[in-house]
Image (tube, rainbow, N blue to C red; front, side, top):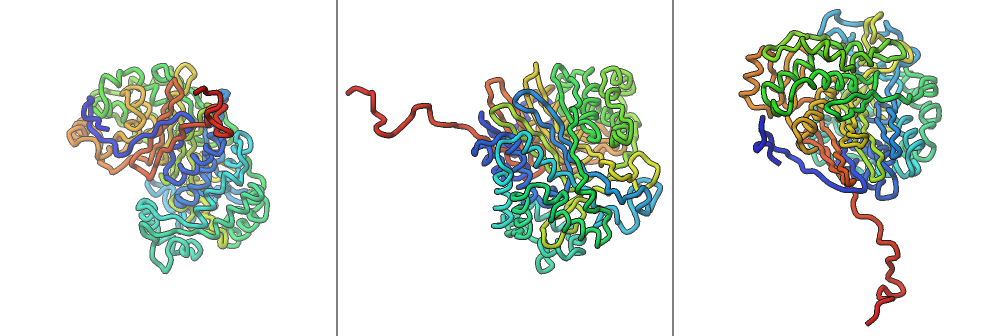
Length: 564
């Protein structure tokens, strides 16, 4: 597909879409998409498919996601109910605001601590929520038993799979840290050398861990034998996490945030995920301009997008907090009145100085699944262990890589994001569903930390204002700013970047903004179109066909009833 025949910046899509009526999965690895389709083919629904895909991603994208991580899922059920299942990580009970020694009071080193203790190693591990959230979603909304959902992940961990260049690069980039931990180094740096593209990765210990979860359920971690093993080891090497943290962890059902953009209802996750609020705030600001008429990728459109991003970034601190600890003014920020109040600050002819210092170490190294079935169930879910390979350690004998979510807390006491026992981490997760007249027309999401809301918002513009297909919307060049540099993907022409610079933007050409997006578009006749972009190993897969026509039989004779 080629955007050159349309107005605005040219780009060519690198991947192709898949269309089907009975189910669709867009994940960031082909084996995860295959696991999702396997569940749909076995009679499962979108929730079953999403959970199976996520378990599989812990095997094939071990650098991105794991059972000791965190995340959130926007789930729309066939009966129209919508809920955000919050499985984000929390601070352990033993953690304190002064648990770390900051190295600076100034940005950009403000969030760093002595010895990188809040980033790498056992002290960086927060209380995980992924496993409990996935299992609860399957039990409450799915159809298939947990053991069936985990089977593809066990298969790939036990038999092994071949590394993609993407995974091999991630291993090579983190090799110095991985080498510091014997257990994780033995898996990813055998003989002291990083695994390379095409190598077979077998994770026998992790396969055994998955088997125990399949047999005993999530309780084996949240208070059971495996959880005791995890907590005992982590405590022995200096972690704040204890068995009691695992036993007391709870997921939270949250009501999504909602708004409209040009008559399309946009549904997203609420705080402590900032993405839903930010996306709606930016769309409200832009709604006053005819973005479609201005054209995709033009200097005029990108200037407005960048200015709206800056305003939202300046407000982001207000929504970057656990609402159980901080009053979050979500309703005001997503209101049309607030957008009308802030919109005059945008000068169409000059870049403004809405510079924001956003206290966030959220990692771009995340994964996402967007999955739907023919009955109307939809899941769009972002999950992660935060940084590449999380805390960059492994629980010996389990194959489990824990998160490093402590890195998201402000190491300075007395701040909104300071460490407090039980406080949930914050996230830029922006899992969205768009609806027209109550009917879903798209679902999307992607990894990418604080760049997620900007990228998801631009996909909404692409779909609604520019009339792009899901594939075009996912792959189109992106921009990002929070007030400092304006990051512009290299797919945007030099002339457009030069014009933006002349308007006062501090332009920085980058290879990519955020990660691999998965989009499903929904048609009125029930057709679904799945798309995944070039920024990850994403692959869409669909389920078509169906059962044989009722009454079809080849015994005793398919010719019965016919006269000759």
